[in-house]
Length: 319
Image 1 (cartoon, rainbow, N blue to C red):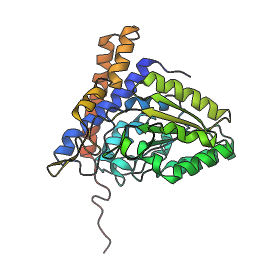
Image 2: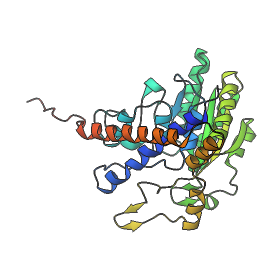
Image 3: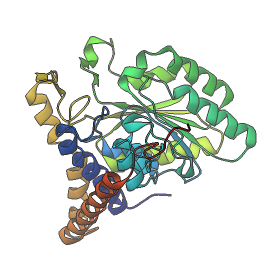
Image 4: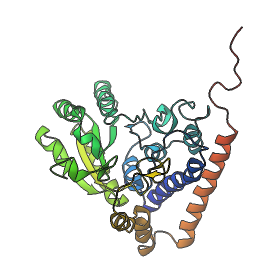
């Protein structure tokens, strides 16, 4: 089922406003855990998750706030987890990089590169054995393309025709290494071809294109024609970790300013906004209202998180 551009816009703005709201608390050291911001990549999470049902599974990585929110995760639960509070989705023990909420199909994220790919494979195998029609999605970055477990999982998934969607969010950098320094070819989607996996690349900053590709991929998986490999070409607008990779006064973001500006002009939210206005899907006033609603939700979530206790707070050891 296709979703409307307005719904995609709402999902993307919700993610963007949330991510940008973490900047000041991080710089003020109110938030102390490492936080990898998803700003700039919202079209991937929104487009893919809009093609899924609540019962489908997703597995993430170190940059998975957007995946969690797009899959239906609660704003309060996410923000509280980043503050490491007991009311967070992982009860405050996971922080930014370990998000778990089975109630919406978010089965876990982890900072180990390609660390959840094999878990998604197992979930897809379980779905096939049970015959429950669920699809599993593995979100990973371009850096994971160098990990052996990805190839092993592609091979096994292809052999068993598993309902598994591999989604590579290629933002051109593995931590601080440009893709051309770690790969001979930029065409990561071609990894799936030798295993007989349906593989394609899509503009990861075009939410409508991502959603259409994901919708077709999910349909194939439900019909027993999986797995499918999607490479989404995108770009993060913040540093690898934190707002700008400024750690103890040392600026480590080596990306050329001209490159960053080039991608800023391809902002996925601006693109879908232009599409909505051009096609009269919604007015500027309606879009402004959507943003205002997201801002209010995020403010309330921060207030909730700050009021919440840390894990084990107030518990005394038995004498």
